[in-house]
Image (cartoon, rainbow, N blue to C red; front, side):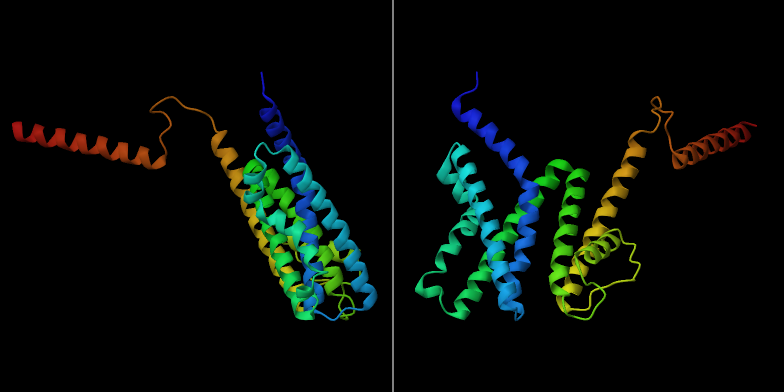
Length: 258
């Protein structure tokens, strides 16, 4: 009969599996939101919108960490192991403090928070792909596609390029991650081209993984042959050479006897 700690551990595992992918997408979305004010001069309205969205996403991560900490059999070691989640929740509380009121301190705080979200995204990606194989890779590619389209939408606004909205950004992301690359629309900003490079690498890796799995499937599902009957072409050639060698040896012995 399962103990209380075992039940909580099982509940924690189910909860983490259910929330990993949605929070991976949120982590990938919030990173450019945090870095955009550091890299660009945004309008006051855009800054307020990003701040409000940042607060909502922070609330989601805070609630998720609270639930996971409650379910963890050993809470303090669990929090030490997931230090990046603690940083994600704790760092925004530094903003009202005097040490974080200067513009430079706020920029550093944003970068540190972005790094914490990046570590969280990498941790979730490793967990998903480690358990799911191809399915995990597909989920990661889907999250990367949505996040890249969102970043491109913000990065390309007012740049004079062809990507003028989220719909165009999604179309561009799909053609890029599938390595089709029609070239009808493309990013023109530095940030946009950096995201494009990342998405190209994701697409190349994804299709390489799919190709390897398809090849492995056909190799493993080939007809089984009895021992000694499954020799390949090279083995057959070597066997024939051995037979010819034996015949020549026999013929030489016969001539010596005569």
